[in-house]
Figure 1 (cartoon, rainbow, N blue to C red):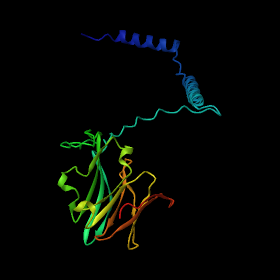
Figure 2: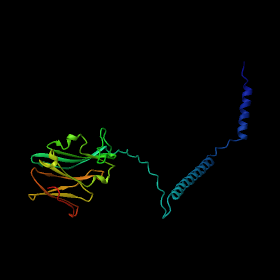
Figure 3: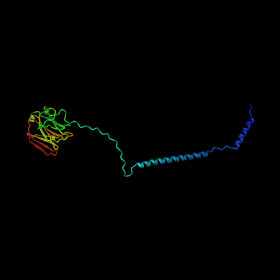
Amino acid sequence: MTPDHGQEDWARAAFARSRETYPSSQAPVHQILTAARTRRKRRRAAAAVASAACVLGIGLTAAFLRPSPGAVAPAHRPAPVSSAPVTPPPAKVGARVAEGTTDGHRWSVTLEFHRKLPKGYTPPNLPGGTTAQGTSLLCRRMYIGGVRIDRQGGPWSDCQTVTGTQDPGASGGLGLWSLHDKGLSGTRLMVSTPEANVAYGIVTLADGTHVKATTVTVPGTAYRAWAAPIPDGKTITTVDQYDTHGNRLTHDTNWH
């Protein structure tokens, strides 16, 4: 097929006439940059306003939360404290009243409190056919040369029943004890369970010797005692008891 050169020339001439009739304008670069700068300034202003509002809100919140002058800030509820387990009282508690060496024999006296009557314990019969009453047991454990006094009567022969830890019936006793002859010969022990105001006792012997013994209390109870050794062959003239100020409270001369 032969190209139509006349038609092509006509199209080129028509395009040239159209371009001369409607000239193309340049792009509005200046207007575009101006509009972009305006939009950027507006965004910065809006961001500044939002930031100021946020700071103001935080300040107002802190002002409302802060107590006014003179007001007391509300106390925070403390964390719960875990309670410690309750330790039950011991079934038996004792106190060493006194100890030493006399006539070459080691001796000691201990006051022992049993909170409950031990198994196998039989309360002794009292004069008149009655039986001793009580919920607890108080024992005077007395030893001379490693041998317990009154051991022949069984494990509870040197004990008495009491009610609780404050029984007043357990106070006021005074006795002389030994391993034989009911305390009349050999190495002996003078043991007192005094009233609460007695601080110490003094045993005076016929040769002028004074034996002082301090009162000791069983922890957690009102039971107390003092004990003094009496050498073999010595005679007691007086037994006196005193308070903490040195005032004599009792004077006993019945232990010749």
